[in-house]
Image (tube, rainbow, N blue to C red):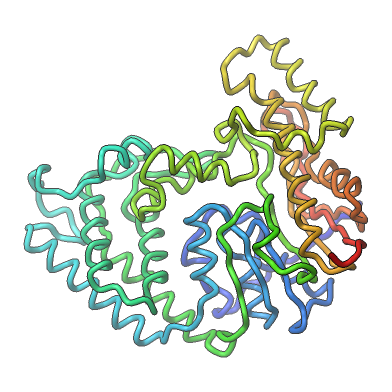
Length: 431
């Protein structure tokens, strides 16, 4: 194991592309991707895969370097972000012109109802405001967005639909997703998403148009790389066969979820519902079933990923220790009772991912997984990187090493939690 220190150099203006268009929780900074791609010797003749692509950090960096890449992502909002952030084809001027036309239409409709976008102007009759359907409303956090900002969002969304142009639709929807969260909502983000100070009113159209203009400026600076091939697939990283050709990937750089209580679908719930990705409890359940089981809120009765690690002694001991700690502490909630099971399911899901991945890797392919230690289950330390390295080796991968990227102090235990890059190599045969 070794420690690496990477300077987070100030990005050039062009490097700003889309990292500011829409943020999830960025698990690693762009310069970390560049460091390892350079270390691997990745170039224009290679293909890089990010099987947990999130909002596309790896894909954007590959495109800027002229390297072909593929991203797999199961969360539809994150998938929209990664797909859009790597689409540099729109003409910047035409994009700005179309967005301005949509904004003018939205402002005009608001003004006809005596509603101003920029300032709190009056208190309109609540019965005249656009609303989400009852089931949609029940899917989002209570008070996560106030009625008047929600009305403005829905008016803008209506105008986007009426003026839709396939050349710009994804870029405009992505900016709407960010405007919903950053400008219109009452959400606050910490270890988990919650509701902060409630805003009775907020500007929506203006901030959305500002985001579109920033996006257009980034596109103008990156036109020379717009033809570099990037492919995005909305799929489960544990089921890769059929999504990519066999023996097609040279390198993997990714950051999977960690085993903790962070519900990633909750983080993006508001924009997922408003954009129409999730409309019912059934659709939410289907989305969660397509994710690695990293938290107790997406565990289901028929889940069987744990069979993949039933003979892994260290993981079984870890899960047993978590359950024994629960009993000693007298914790009896339904979620707490599932901590040991979700630990087994998480590592079993990652084992299934590594097994599936073998079918798309070229012999000699190099892999890097950015992961972090966790101690959120009754303060039992989970050394995620070490355990994933063990699993990968049991499936035929070679461990190159584990680099410590950075450390953070756990407030509950006072222990240092390591964020690491697990480096692997696939030495198998062609499939």
